[in-house]
Length: 204
Image 1 (cartoon, helix red, strand yellow):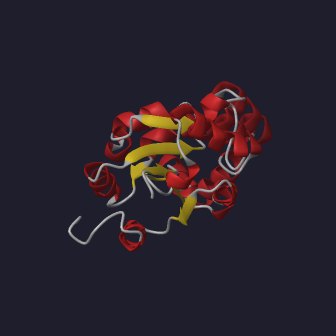
Image 2 (image 1 turned 90 degrees about the vertical axis):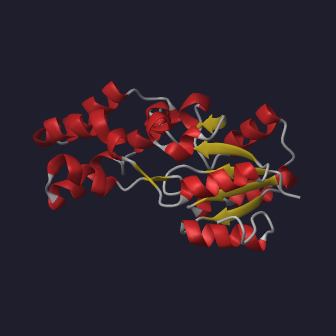
Image 3 (image 1 turned 45 degrees about the horizontal axis):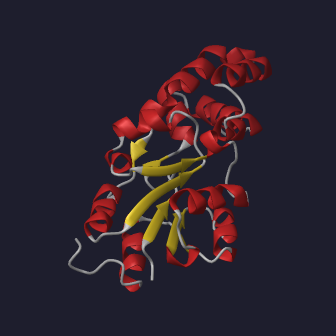
């Protein structure tokens, strides 16, 4: 029986679209694409999520690579979290699950800016418990981060459902005995939860 529902954050609870974020900074679609590849598509971005690189260090690396974008790079790194929006209908879904008595957790690759987002995004504010990559110094899909969640909150893998938008993040917990689901849309996710008898048609 599922008792614990664990959510990824980006493209599940919040809308993380690098080119859209960068376009809000530059107002130029071509430059936005280049900035998104330079910043969010880099190994340094993964290290920010891993908590092994500071934003100041990352900015220095990006500016060295593309000095012509120095100002835009600074603006993106300083303000990207202000331009991340909620995913449609997910706050209601989280509320419905809480009302039905499920224990809810966030398990996400995310930098320390998570705490800024939690202040802004209503769905995130509903979670008391989270395991965050930057704090654990390990990113999904490394098995260690899934083990941290199980051990910290004394969870039974057979009672866990993990919802993530990326298949590569679901394979490891599935092998560990979790139920997993690839997120596509809030309505599709809700339908899956109905099929699992976790939610009912009346939970609308």
